[in-house]
Image (cartoon, rainbow, N blue to C red; front, top):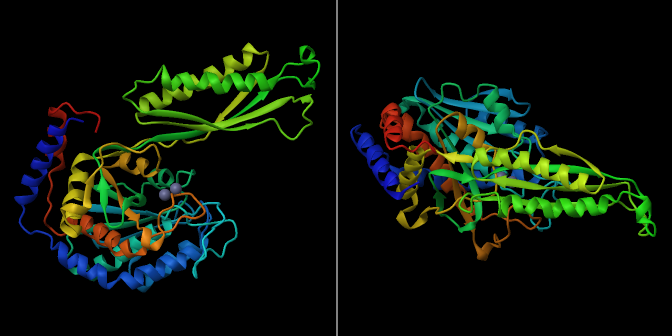
Length: 436
Ligand SMILES: [Zn+2]
Ligand SMILES: [Zn+2]
């Protein structure tokens, strides 16, 4: 996207916003959120102790429901097994705030008073923080419910990690009638307290494959009497790489990583019958991503055939589509972030990340924006990557996440932002930018 699109459209949104009176008191939201910091931290720690993987978030879901009930917030449950949709205010517009609740099958390797009590499971992607921050926002918004003109949906979704919980919720109609959806992810690659996002694609499409290469095993000293699946698997590893280096536009990011290659536990003087190959395929544009999946299957089949073997390829279903942020929603995030933490702690991301998110399904269904919240802080040890056993969170930022959620909701339901989406969308079309 050309920079001038961004400038022009940001101006349009600003003009539309400014024509509708009341501005949002960001410092008041921030002060109120600061007042809830200890409450939010307690929730995060409670959830951190009970990490549950996708669609098994029973205790977590119960905890969220108990908290919503204690705040006298109405909610629907179950939505997609363990999912919950809370509601504050009434009528239109409807703005949705989303948090994911699931953990990862990782053994935590950090000594904390509130470390995981579920052996083998860990909140290593910060979803405990996401849930706690959204509950913080819920409490802030509930306190002003009487003055809201519209509805805030609080979406607590299951199964972000690989099982597309967001898609399940969208398919169940959770976003029907919703004007905008916002999501937040803690991000170790950014300094604590920095908000960052970008218009257009922010996260990649992603899928995984598992291939079983079948040949005919035999004696390692008599390969001519066998059909060697090891040679076929090696050919597959090599054949996949040119799909990125030779068939993908260098300016259109994609990656194929073969991460599993297994001949089993047989004796080393025996040619096995089968070899397992597995890996990850990601791309930034949806169209190219699906073509790569087709080509990868084709190439694996031909490479196996070349060596007298067959291959059975299974792709994870559904693949995650790219997360594509809506331009005007990002302009709202930028305004709110600058209003809350100042210009210095807002960062416009120059490039997307090849990590993936099922929030993409929500942002595909309605205009949405996904925002990163920095948690990198050496003084508290939050320097390890997401999905690692030593991942730690800088809890001092939690109230900022609650404040951003609340501010983004208020942009729609405070009576200020009667944003004419039709006008903005038609302007987008006039500019010829159909990528957004
Ligand atoms: Zn994750
Ligand atoms: Zn995550």
